[in-house]
Length: 453
Image (cartoon, rainbow, N blue to C red):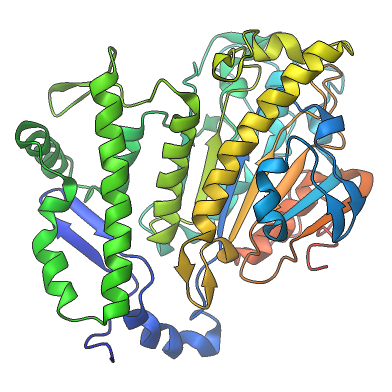
């Protein structure tokens, strides 16, 4: 059955305070075909950075073998079924995370430099200074192509001032995204607020009214767009109707999980539309990470943004992981001094983080887009700004990419780069794949070789 309508890529289902962007549909294919001559008809490439703190147990992170002939170690075993979709790299370095004469403060520096490539100014007060991060460099250039230039999310809240690490402001430890050298992009940790941002229409008064009505009458956000959805269903093919239904079902499932977390919460997180709203952050960290990952997935699927940073835990975080039997603080045991008991606990935490990241990567893989999957059109960088938490070293960082960036990255490999290869070389290569071109970023010495195979 042929489509009865040709829709623009930026099509929204609208209602009171609501604007739900649609995923890529077959009926948008003529629009893509008309632009194919310029390359604009291809699905867009998206980029995300999923950051974990305190380094890794590197003996259980680095694969055995090389190239396509490698085996995944304990930490990365959650990616066994995704092995052909990932590229693991060793040897990458962020030199400006080192002291370079600035003394202690490795944790703060490692987060601040991770995506900026710039040595942060050692300061506890308002005179913080780092540099624009690679995500914001891209967002600045493609902002007019999506509803949101970028999305910054995380799991742990954090102060933006005060002392957090040996004379460094908390702003350094708690952020990896920087709009410019003095402006960190504060991450959102409350799932409800991310949800309202993604699916609101940008009108504060209407969005507030929508939230109040949903809260008062136990309505779903989908109730406000049902009329638009029903009209659209009469105009598109059966395949598109199914895709729209699956997408809206995913939106509703996220909404229900947020509502469940709010009902179980005993803490008030925010006031929306004059109403005290309980926190929607689940007590279970894994569910919190997965929920945020699902919203990043929906944001990429609906093309409301193509750039995201996801701080799974703040640098230097000393959170215990009792859900997996680790009662010690993460930061404390990262100073393991070779103690095999502490190293085993670190590996368990690293493995736990990898499980949650693999969940999100798998969700991206299970969404069809164009001739492939949503994951095929993504670059999801997962890793840390410190190699070993005891040494606080910044060379040979644990870095993995999931997704093929529109077919321009050959995954299913482990690639060893020479030690001291700038991590910023990878960012230059990612810029090209996002349609943003420059020859300079941090201490980059050129594009990273070996991404294409």
